[in-house]
Length: 128
Image 1: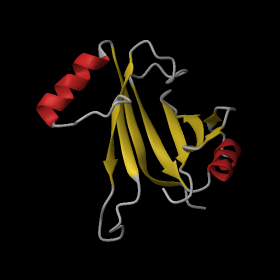
Image 2: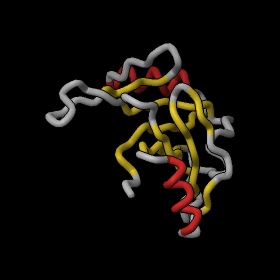
Image 3: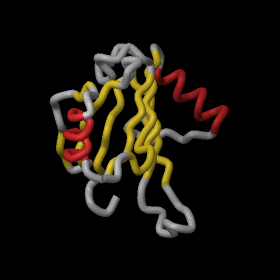
Image 4: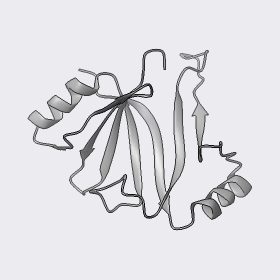
């Protein structure tokens, strides 16, 4: 079974998200979109249409979205079959969160690594 197929997103926390976004805009040229993050579009020899993105965004430091992790970051990994992977990870003894979210943006699940970092698993909708 195919597991991780790419990085879907990088999320970091900040006590002053707007200040941090401005720093990244000014010094690294990341032009944030209205929703507060930026979507890097993929394009390569194997993907000439550039289908797919990696999202990079800053969360408010008080956000509980990364819980139970205390880390100031979370990585979102693209996966081919979220439900199958979640079941496999459970069978392998990994700490898998019970909840799976489904929306027009795809399917989302979460696992916690041995260091306590929460990782987001994302099965994109068809065609993305």
